[in-house]
Amino acid sequence: MPPPDLRLSVFRTDGLTLEKVWEIGNREVINFMAQPKELYGVADIKVSQVKKVNLEVDPNDNPPRHANIIGWPPEKPRQMLIATELAAAAKLVLRA
Amino acid sequence: MSMLSLTYSKRSAIFFPDPRGVSDSANALQGQSEELQRHFAQSITFGEHLCEMLENLLKAKEEYSVDNWDGYGAKAIDEFSYEKAVRFALSLPSIIPTPEIHVDPDGEVRFEWYEGPRRVFSVSIANNYELSYAGLFGANKTYGIEQFHDDIPDAILDNIERVFSKGIYLGTTQRG
Image 1 (tube, chains in turn brown, yellow):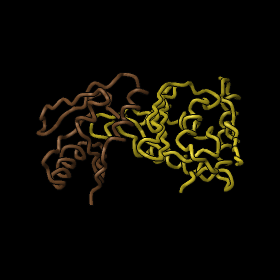
Image 2 (tube, one colour; image 1 turned 30 degrees about the horizontal axis):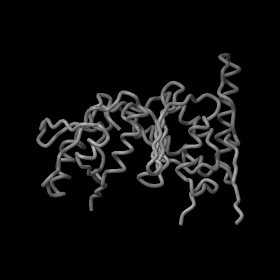
Image 3 (cartoon, helix red, strand yellow; image 1 turned 60 degrees about the vertical axis):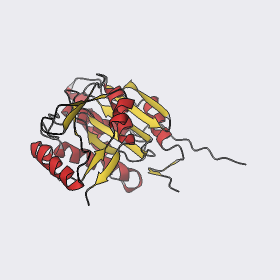
């Protein structure tokens, strides 16, 4: 589900090893949580799938490789449907 | 060929109407009815998966009790959404399989029934009387808003049923 500002934070992981992906996840996501949790895995999704549900990827490289998925509708039921479609299209990669 | 049709009551066996009174007596009666529902939930026959749901709701309340739990400015669990979610859980017919419980970044409690990536339905409980819902059933999609007062709306129960269209058997799903 998107956050309140409707800019869903993601990282572009093309060409990265899984080790590097975990490193980015811990450094840029887990560290910012109010109560940091264990990172168990990531959802891997292609930009084409994001566009298929009428959203856009806005790369800002701040921090490097960072982007936002934008264009979410304001209505919660539509957000829920899109999030469900994205989850269905995503590949779950669990940490070994 | 013969076919057995399983029908069930769409109302919880322990249903009590949403209180409309504002007096001390009405509040006391409401407290007693909720206490009775919780005792009923602890009975082995009827309450096993209801107990599990209530426990999971409590865990969610603890886990998502502070703002920014996701590192992206998510809101802490909304107290009123939590209270309505407990009421929603108590109102579910006992035959409905136990859902997963999540908290959304807007602080609302969300119930999800999942049988696969394209067989999933979720309901988010707002801090008013609104239920936002969305579901994927193969190539079919649904989403919308329903009001939740005394009963869980039929649209919600029918969509939960669609997730388990192969059959619902006493609080669990038919496998294989």
